[in-house]
Image (cartoon, rainbow, N blue to C red):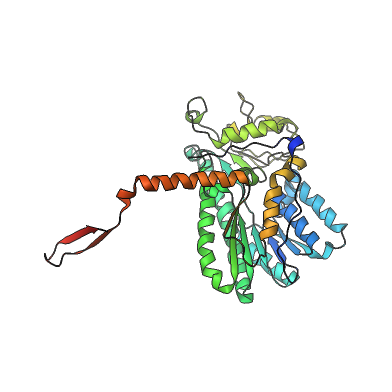
Amino acid sequence: MTTPQLVAPAPSKLPRPRSPRFPPHNAPRVWFITTGTSPVAIALARQVLEHGDYVVAGVLPIEFEKHEERSEEFRAFLDEVKTTQRWKERLRVVGLDGRIVSQCQAAIAEAIEAFGRVDVLFGCTSEAIIGTIEELAQSSRTLSLVQEQFETNFFANVNIIKALLPSMREKKNGHIIVLTGITGHLGTPGLGMYCASQWAIEGYCDSLAYEIAPFNIKVSIVQPNMEVNVLTNRLTSVPPLPQYSPDVNPAPLAREIFSSILDKLDMSNSSSTFVGDSSPTSATSPTSADSALLNPSTGDLLSSPQVTSFYPPLSQALKGALIAETVHALTAIGGHDNPPARHIVGFEGVVSVKEKLKTVSEELEDFIEVSSAVDIGKDKDTAGTIAIEPV
């Protein structure tokens, strides 16, 4: 199994964002973005508003009101909209918790009332649970995280798609884009439930694409590198088991991979929101309560003895470099007359998936003899017996 290596780009080598190429269209498009506070959503909204399109941004109220660090960038974006004349009438913000069906229906109704239709739905609701399968089975709290993972990554996207489909079908036009990751192709140790939720939504979208194609509704799955979704959304870690520590278990677990990245981000100066087993706490800098969440021997937040949630403290420059390719791809794909059914963003992701497919192909060749089909039927010469004939 190939596990992608995650390396945060050095500030001196940050790539310059490319100018996006929009697909041609006769009229401004209306975008519905499910998680407007995410960095990818904000960058995409800024690009399409500048291009002349309309945007409806769904925002989780509790995240916007109580998690100041998470909503800071979105608040700055709203201030930018207020001072940019050509954007003012083209943005609508709606309250949305995708896990609640009624909120999805209300948000879509508000979008259609405001702009008359939705042309492009961009589903980017996501969070990552870090922990091995055994670590997620330690307590009722860790077991509940499995359900929460699917409620957020799978059902939140499913619910908003179902709420919008009748409108798109009636107009016989629309484009649904779901942001997943190469973890939709590659299993990653320590991210089993996260990978499972992404495989689930991809299987759903693959099936859905065939069902709604006759109504001229397209479906695209966009797969950036793993760190794009994981490091730009809420990250939750469960207490580690000693049997899976690096000194006794050679598997390249996600906890160690992401811990090394977070170490380089200087967590001590973070303004992230830390959440333990108790109620959420918000801080402008780490407090003594936050320090209690750290592993006492390593100082590592992802090895905390409690269930811990936070938003990785990426700088604006690093965040912009991390999502630039993905935003560029979304801009070029969204609303295209003939968009790809699946698009892998970035050279490293393409190589990783190719390696996986190569391994699968080689295994098929190795075990082709035990995969041969057979015909099972009654032998005409001997009544009551069954003949099995290899094809």
